[in-house]
Image 1 (cartoon, rainbow, N blue to C red):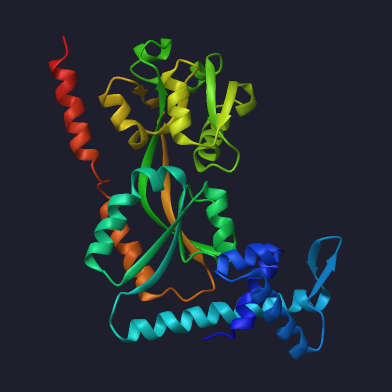
Image 2 (cartoon, helix red, strand yellow):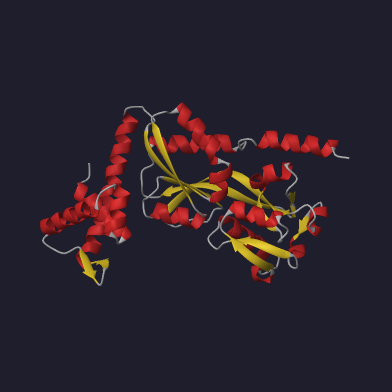
Length: 316
């Protein structure tokens, strides 16, 4: 319902690029330029400064961008509320999720939700917890799933379930022989860390500080933003890592990795977050509640755990 010119302006202002705005809206650059020129003619003012091949918002453009954000958000809410009145759970659903949740928990949940509500058109953005929150703050997502309780003041959150982080190492690593690992034993061995902005990194750093250990005291040999890369590096014997126990179920079953509980354990909350001032649509609310019920027993975990227990009992 929002004026198409306003949507185009918002995209250009967000990307500060006519080309990227056109790509996001499936429009050619000349079409984007034409829409902006029409809007500037209507307001009788320049909205962008174009100098040296770069663009920026003028003072008038900055004001227009703030209003465009509100107008487009209200239009989206209106569409969602009218769909809610029809009693149908349908429409686009823009989801963001941290890597662990997106890779190991959400796929089956999304599949089951889509099967139950075929009119829903989900879209999934994957990034670390910081990136998901940033996208929510920009109103580029309807709902986000992150690790931990820390989120922007403009976002509201709802705890979904608990997740335990454990030490993960190769089977021939010295730590693999331990039944549990105290924080003090993590200082000397080579450590493979997640990147800044990662929910796992944040929770781990807080855990170490509570144990009286500065995170910088660990022997960090590499940082990785990819869970799959991190698991590969650990399996190759480059060091140990700390990660969600559900992220290594397959590798543990295959004998590629070993996981050891920490003492005391690290537990964190998996949280659904959404813009605080936005009225939550029936679709978003339905998906959050569906995910909450499913995350009480993460997909596939019970079967994996049972198989691991049987394998352990039958081992010589």
